[in-house]
Length: 472
Ligand code: GLN
Image 1 (cartoon, rainbow, N blue to C red):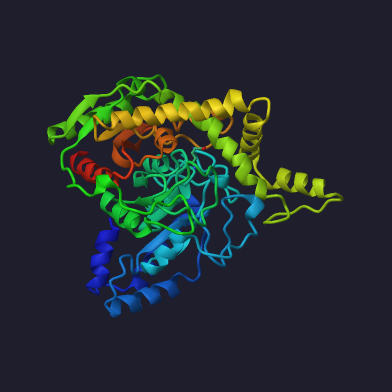
Image 2: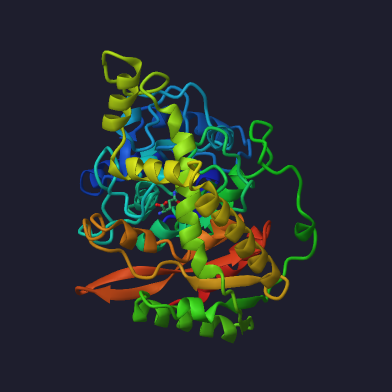
């Protein structure tokens, strides 16, 4: 398994060049993509970026990602390239500037090999609603890779990139990472600039890394985090909690009754318990925590999220960006462009969001959800005065079959039960492969999730590395 850390060393020792590495990764991506559909587009300028990286390397410039081939989700703007966010409405939309994270990757010397497929506008848990077709799970192509950043997870899992960026609004990095057997991490809200990330739900969205190992995820995270004057929510300073010594042994809180809920596969729960036992054996302390409002995170999410979606997606009107349908009146242009340009899930959420924000229902739904969001956040923050980390399985079950949940949106939404609380509270979370379960004679990966207090990304990386050491 070629990791970013190993490639960094090999490139510096001149064992191979960035061009040779890019060539190898791109040929692998080209070979696998017809089956997996991880990439919407492989860029023809990847070799030119590799040449720039080779120059950086030969001049001894210590750019941290010099020559590292990466994939980027189709909702992050790259100047001059199509950025479609997986939607028909934007399939002819070319970005006019680079997202901040893209600028950071470029100055770190990274080679962006292509844009990865995703659920339309990042709404979904299976990467099946993508305008470029469904993404398949590289471990079993009859199954979904998870979503919405399924293309980024699959690109890494199939060897078509050494790492990738995704966005996580309710679990879209952690859930596909678990389903594809890779590491996925959502930073604290505001840690990574959202400038140039197409907004889904602005109070929940956050960009983060996918990688094969926790160490690699940390390398990518360090390259993209930091204050950005272009994003007023991107934090400026190091937080108090980061100034102290990094702990090695943690107190891990387990929300027992949340994990005992119906709808979670028994073998997924067993794998979780096994890893927790092993971590205990390594000297970490384990405690039961009571988080009675956690089950409300999902319904709260599915009110706040569509509300923000309905506002954010209003700009796609057939006039300002992308797909436009000719019609006799302006109203008809809007109606037909949006009606045809957006897929079913996008339309469903726009309707839901408009409804919960409408004058008659605002107090009953949106305002209530905002109040419960505050309760959930306070409960989590109180818990973090007692424990360093909260652990859950990442998903209730392993990767499901293509088509299995497409006709039942509520089943699809339940996929996010463990991941949404972190977005609701703006705290960081990581999913690390924790072992496998068997379905139809196929071995499928599952993940363990850890959440931490705001700005405690370091604790997540530390515990993640311990999981890598103890898992079978
Ligand atoms: N699956 C969730 C949803 O459909 C999360 C999406 C995301 O994190 N972008 O909204």
